[in-house]
Image (cartoon, rainbow, N blue to C red; front, side, top):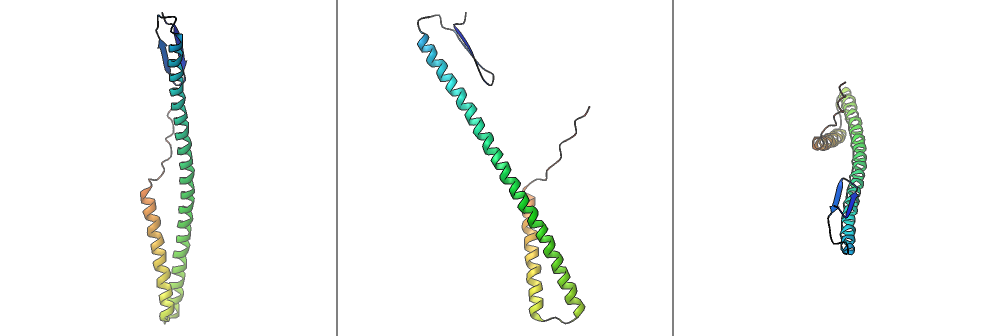
Amino acid sequence: MALFEIKIPDNIHVHIHDHRVGDVEKLSRKIDFLTQKANQIMSTQTEAAELLNATVAKLDAVAVEVDKIGTETDGLQKEIQDLKDAAGSQGNITPELQAAIDAIAARGESLAAKVAAVDAKVPDATPPEEPTA
């Protein structure tokens, strides 16, 4: 017959058999110890969940920045093409103008490569599957 039976959160079940009724203090210390350990486990899991949620928020912010870089890169590439088209329609261009066009083109290609490198590191999100009835 059990002297004490205690249920602790998360399906931890403590069942203590002690036929020495006078040893209640020893049982009380055991119960306190187990309760403390259960609370530590719950606290650690809560802290881990908070850390993971904070990391998700940071990743969301990075995703916004990457989207912004992508948009800016698209804009740069359009401006580069517009400059090339304008320069091409005028025939002769100065070396300075050609150098400026080349510098912008190189910057656009560099940004596009950086965005592609970041994109390659993070798998694309897949939409959740619809539950079947």
